[in-house]
Amino acid sequence: MFDFEIYSPEDKIILPEVEEYNVQLSLKRDDLIHPFISGNKWRKLKYNLIKARQENKTHLVTFGGVWSNHLLATACAAARFGFKSTAFVRGEDIPSDILFFCRMFGMQLIFTRREDYLDKRGLFVTHFGPDAAAYFINEGGSGPEAAEGCSEIISELKETYDHIFVAAGTGTTAAGLINGIIKFANTPQVHVVPVLKGADFLESQIKELLIIDHPFQFHSNYHFGGYAKTQPELIEFVKRFTSSTGIIIEPVYTGKMLYAVEDLVAQGEIKPGSKVLAIHTGGLFGILGMKEKFKF
Ligand SMILES: *Cc1c(COP(=O)(O)O)cnc(C)c1O
Image (cartoon, rainbow, N blue to C red):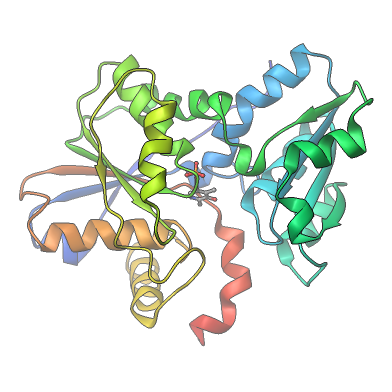
């Protein structure tokens, strides 16, 4: 329905700290799908956009914080595929490179007090209730349409793997991957690395999105203090990974997930001889909000 061909190869990564354990690491380069409609955000939007088009909706309405990769992806996708877009943005209008680009793509931004932001359906109904053209997309694009899009990652794989690693915010991408493994009868074990603290609720949230029950590993101790929190060790890792592979990662999602890969390999949890695929879920613009933490 949309003229949008994607490119996301499986790149073999040479990382000495993983190679020394004789583990082969590849990255599924969803970050290359598009600079702005990046990574899992395209996967999560795809079936939402198809549904919006089928229902003759012409205006995408969504939700996010001032550094939300999802807002940027929605703004760009809306412009690219001929939709209007509006976002309810949590909190104040503070300087943000992501919001700068959202505005460039013509997204209308409605800054919303944190108390009001909690009730997303309510906000949608209040502002766009009678507007038949408006299409609701939840924060982060989460939901069954999003999980379906993410399951396609598995159908694209050219190699076989023993383990697949993915970062989790809402867990929708992880659930989609597991569903893909069920649907396409693939064999790898899925490892989910939540990026927030106290994310045990995520485990059941992921289970709810699965088409049938399926085991997965949940590694809840790589949050580095919580969502968007960092520690010097994580920043050092992100720098080392980027400078030794030529592939940029960021500290909010992919940095924590790849740190977990390296750590679990060193601990022997991932056995020598294993083939590991890590999903590069993109989201690189977020790093522009963390420049001072890197002190280059
Ligand atoms: C949004 C995002 C995630 C989290 O995806 P969920 O489906 O919410 O778990 C992971 N990585 C990056 C780079 C993201 O932007």
